[in-house]
Image (cartoon, rainbow, N blue to C red; front, side, top):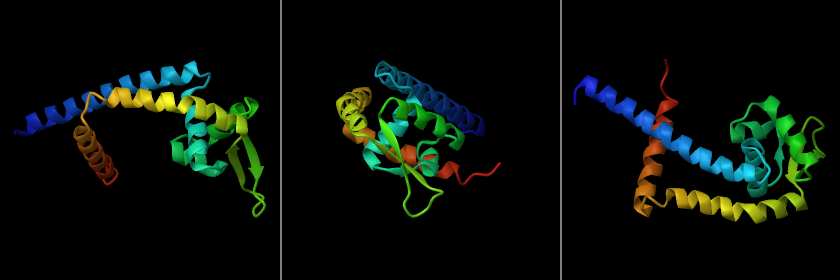
Amino acid sequence: MTKSTDHEQSLKLFIVLSRAYKAMNEMSNRFIQEQGLNPTEFAVLELLYHKGKQPLQKIGGKILLASGSITYVVDKLEKKGYIKRIASPDDRRVTYAETTEKGNEFMASIFPNHEKNLHDMMAVLTSEEQKQAIELLKKLGLSIRDLSY
C-alpha cells in the first residue's frame, strides 16, 4: 500500500469504529434511560454492584469520569436509595460508596436484560470474530497510549 492509501485506510477504520461505537452506545443508553438512570449513574451503580464497595476517590478513574462529577452522581444515586456512603474506619479522608439492598435488587432485575442487549448487538459476529475483535482493539488501545504528539 502507498502512504496515501495507508492514511485513507486508517481514516476509514477510525470512522467505522466511531460509528459502531455510537450505534452501540445509543442503543445501550436508551435501555439505561428507560430504567430511570443516566449512563453515568448506571456506570457507577454497575461498578459497585459487580466490584463491591469502592472509595469515592477511585470511582472516577474506574469509569472514566472527572472526580468532580462523582459527588453529584453519588448524591443522585443516594437520593434514589441505590447506594450509601460509608466512612472509612481507618482514614477519615476516605469515604466509600456501596450499593444498598434496594440498589442490589434493582441491578439484579435490570442487568440481565442489559447483558442480553449487549449480546444481541454483538451476535452479528461469531464467537471467533468477537475474540479477534477483542484482541485487535486491545492491541490498538494499548499502542495508542505509547504515542506522543
